[in-house]
Length: 613
Image (cartoon, rainbow, N blue to C red):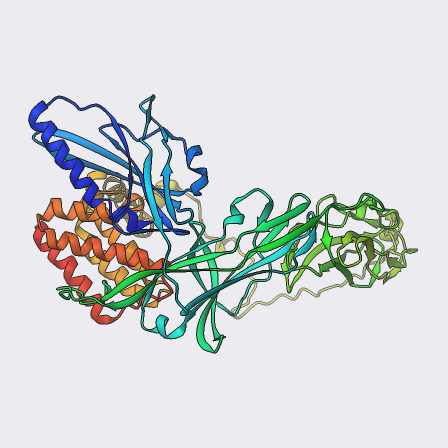
């Protein structure tokens, strides 16, 4: 996505040149609002891959609405938002850029339809755009397959989708792969509910890749595939069919850039080849075979009254502790329900509908929502026996549709034996008849020594309390007045400083460089140093120039540095670092931060500081 935004630079130069001509001819006359569409053509558009499509509003406010209905066939994702301002001959031009990622259809020519855009209450329409897509190259170095846990199921039955992408390990180690894009078209239709698998690959390394234009967690490990040592990336999802019928599921496709040769170019003055690739890349793609899924309707015959939609094969068990109690004592009832990889639909068993439970136990009206532990959904509840005739916790039923037997089933927990004793009630007569022992103590008069008893009035000291005496006491002033005055002075001073926006901004500007250096040192221990570095660079610009860090983009940061330092090289290097660190989130290659690279980044910040001063 960032790559597509970055490639808008050439297009923006044309717009700025046009603004210059308009400014020369029209002077200070304000131009009319213009809305244009732009497609990133800096690289070929490959069938089955995504490309950047931008809507640019010139000399107007941010769009109130962009109607994407005409683009549904291209599965749009995003947008990412940019805004830019230029001043030419006293004329200010503003640009709001909304960039979407569209999915290119099959190989050939196609037309992107017009899009309606509302700006300042007025409707505009972009022009249709003709685009050509080409087929990516093929190679044995990558492969993909797709499988379902079953290809015959019932409506409401959770099935597990697994897409596995394989790439030769040597390519990964040599950092010769980038921009992986996985497409699973049928996930965007309305035939399924989509959920996350409960039992994740806990011991497998996770990373983030683009799936249908959205960031998704995938799991990676290493194995031998077709005789070659490969890195495997797996994406899993729970599919729950909504309606019966035969569904033809198109295969998953993966496109990626693979190195095909070395670049002949000058090494970066500041960072060598650390932040820039030295390879020439070409786009390659691979697609799995389609799958047919047959979905059957659930029968109405034999449906239990307490059936609430569970489809699969489930088991239920229970335990109660303690088992030896008195009437009214609390018993913790724990219920385990398992048998499926997807347990989110499992609900709390309705104990209040079991006659023996209602007769034998007191139960609170509320209950826990349950939590998934060790491939089971676990519920806990406190129950209290009503009388000493209670001998057991009765069986607790669970009804579901058994997909293996093709019929409804009801399974129950085993009865849990209890030993309940009567509880004796203490009455008022019990309290009245209780004889309390009395004790007598001999009081002995002592006349001498430290523990002597003094009976004369002369031993009494006048300790009459007077507020005036206390307030004028040196001890009171030292212990209370002086610290109180110091505290009040400190609070007032701090309040005056922290509540002054100008002082706050000045303090942030002053400490921006040192703060960035401290955060950069912490990046070494971060799991994803690229994210940490990107955050540091955004925060530095925000603190130094009073910008909101969350909305800053690489291009905006580069433009700010260029404006403040008038140094195009510093601006370009800063922007390049941000683009590379953000792009690394979509790469298999982990971002490695060394002491040398930290030093080089700090030197870049120091040069910017000197230019600003």
